[in-house]
Length: 158
Image: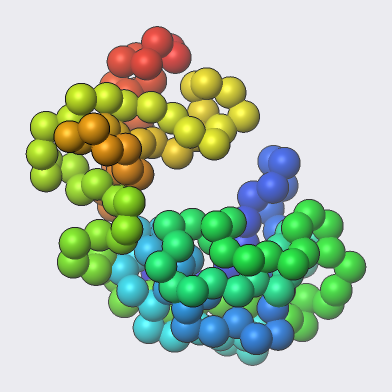
């Protein structure tokens, strides 16, 4: 996994711009995408400047967040800056052992619940599993449409 970092906000893709993008920021993106640990963090010179909106600006991650939006972000939504600060990542391409904090690996134990969280409706969002009374995000790089269809059916979402 490698390329310019873009996020989808309100149905439209846009870039992430940051003058001090670093390895901690890249680590979160790589892990969120299921692409293992970050190998390198880049400014626009590696993958080129984007076009269209800039959705996130000035991102500061510690490196252990599960998603980019859990990091400190000073600019959300339409940002008036230049694409000269668009960022990119190169990931190692394999998941780190043990998965991230709050992350449950498939098959690790028996699950007692499934839910979708942080979505715009009860039938949209991040997949979470309950195991031994604790909820955590599903971490599965091979998750695909048939898996999603089974979960949606199980949750009564179609």
